[in-house]
Amino acid sequence: MSKTCPKVAILGFHLESNAFAPVSSKEDFLAQCWEEGDHITTLARGLSHLPSEVPGFYQRMDTLGDWTPAPLIVVAAPPGGPASAEVWNDFLIQVEQRLLDALPVDAVYIANHGASSAEHVDDTEKVLMEKIRSILGPDIPVVATYDLHCNVSPETVDALDAVISYRTNPHIDQRERAAEAADLLHETQSGTKLVTAYLRLPLTPPSVTLSSAKGPYADLITLGTSLMQRPEEGPIANVSVAAGFVFSDLPKCGMTITVTARGDLAAARQAALTVARAAWADKGRYVADTVNVEQAVQLAQTIAHPILLADVADNPGGGGRGNTSWLLKALDQARVPGVVLGIFIAPDLAAQAHELGVGAEFDAVFNSEESTYSHRYVSRARVLYISDGAGVGRRGILQGRKFSLGPSALLELTGSGMQVVVGSLRRQLAEPAMLEMHGIDISKANCVVVKSRGHYRAGFDEFFADDRIYDVDSPGLTTPNLRQIRFERLPRPVWPIDDDAVWREPDWATSPALP
Image 1 (cartoon, rainbow, N blue to C red):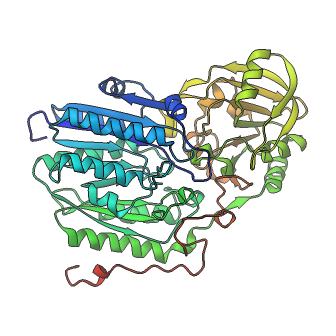
Image 2: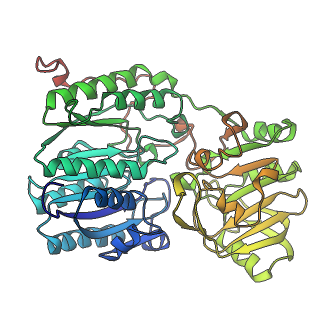
Image 3: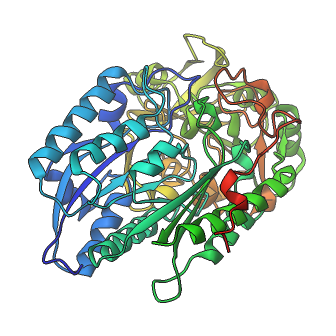
């Protein structure tokens, strides 16, 4: 940066809030990530459990020259219900006090998920950004990176200098987007003024339709990226096409396009309008391609080559509990050979397996306490392996990051031979190491069942090509069949839930100032 050793404040709040899931408690954050103060810098420059954006930002800043990091607080929890009031209030108080203590700063970098909410606080992003802006005033640049499943409000955009969302789904570009944020902050330190244009569409596509490799969303991201320009080429610095997270069930849900430009608002608006018009014209392509449980069993029984079944309606990565038993029961009772399933979240069952030890045979009770979608299922089982559940990811979204399943175990259901990895902490099976650490050779499985929505594709692509993967829709908190969900606060009408959804372009769309 042009300033001598600029001081940059760093913070982050990672939570994808599913309004239909239990509240996310302090324990949920402590089990994944709750780090404060200077220790964040030590973690960011080594192997850690921090969100990948944070080490990515440090790495890029280190290459740009001398700088002084001023880490405030970085917290993360698995997708779940809104943050508890305790968690949110504690986080916000710490941000305020630590930022005040760090002043003066030259810039702020925020690594957020972007789809969070809290008890009695719908728009936590707005509250956080406006709090930071009220402390800093209008002239200190503040840049945030977001998951592409973020829910962005206009108030949030107004409080920031730039919004940068992921461009890959499965998410494997967090470090790159953080580096982009560092580069933009570098530009601001050289005098560049950033402006933003924002549009929201009444469009909430099922998450299984949001691949960045192919399909309508991939086309949209490609379009947005094609409009971006290096400083010497033109004003458009970033185009972020955020699909949103509809299960947050909030007024700000919906696909958003946020364009950051170097001083040229008219160019930013034109770019946003170009992408938004393309998205709305293409809305009919966001159709989920799934099979039901019965069809999934038939596929596992009849297809000659190994397949992967994704239990997308029970995705812990979207707030699912990871313990619905529809596929488990159906495959076990059908006696389908060579099935591996994970991660089934059952702390009591994992604890029982640890107590009994390897080799023990017992009646395994899945969901001893039933809840909506999570029904009791009992099967005779043998304990094959026990683990503390701690590992390091080697592929996809968790590559190079520490993770924990809590105490875990590998069970073999003796009737069918199905192998089930049972974990204690709610984690999606997006990483092959989660199976391999329990002694499983994935290459020898006939059918792998993952409780995950899409991130498994970047983790298991070395074993399963796209034509060997099937998304299974069973009842669950993250079903792609959005018409099954009783939304209460989602703005209606919205596509694809309502056929009569209409998007009206903003008044400035007809401005003569637009090119």
